[in-house]
Length: 392
Image (cartoon, rainbow, N blue to C red; front, side, top):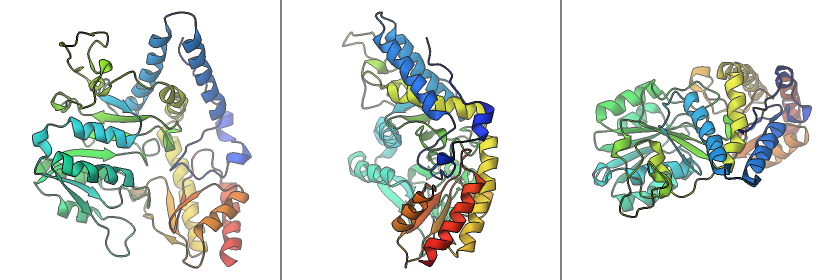
């Protein structure tokens, strides 16, 4: 039997527990009303399947993992069989780069922006000497909050083999002009990849509009899932050219082919599997994907935008610099503000936490990401508390 589709009722989705109504952490961990019960039910079903005194466990848990990957594929408009799995986004990118033909990278360039998620830059800096490419990092302008698209485009020439684009940045919630970047990448003959982690599930996204070659995320953040899982779309047109370095019995069309001289890669994205797959993080993340599908991204985004405008007003009330774009069309789901130098961001964060407002800081920047469980009444508390702590 499959994991039950345990979802909150419509009323419970509209009336979150007050303890969670100040949750502004969707840029890190997503929540929905009834989440704990839904995840417990999914894990209980997994336990029943795994401990059952029969041979059906492998088929059942594999179906649960596949269902989660298919839900994510449907969310981003990806065809079945085009989604690979790994432990996280960094591992997805590693598998992808290692699978590219050597001639695709040797003597060429890979381009990434300075305001990328740092883990990807750490990865590429290590891979560059091993795979023979030059890593080009497009820097922010002095005193800028993010890398401008025009600077990224100016550094992107025909020598670039692969571009690593951040759809929405984690430090400013700045949304790139994806249409312009992808069009430029096509004219340069580059492979276009995209980190969609910070916005998928809050902003509508389709891998075909514009068409990209690779996109990765985790089920965390807006997808309301668990750590330990990563998913990536690989264009079906590109898949036949990719031969993953890490391979195993699950990389094959038939995992039960154990003849040592007859290994071949699966035709679809399963070629990126290797040994026995990880199942539990995907099964535990499935309730979040089901909730998201039932609720609809438009509902989530409309609520997010409404509270986002209120958060910008609150920042202005307290003369906090808003480093996120003020335009909704250029902003992800997060409002990022800069805490003045004469205040300790961590101290302000702790003060807000005591008042039921949950957010985080990155250096001098504070991040606020409202989702459906976040309520306007708690933003009034945020306004009041900022008035108190910013005066102290």
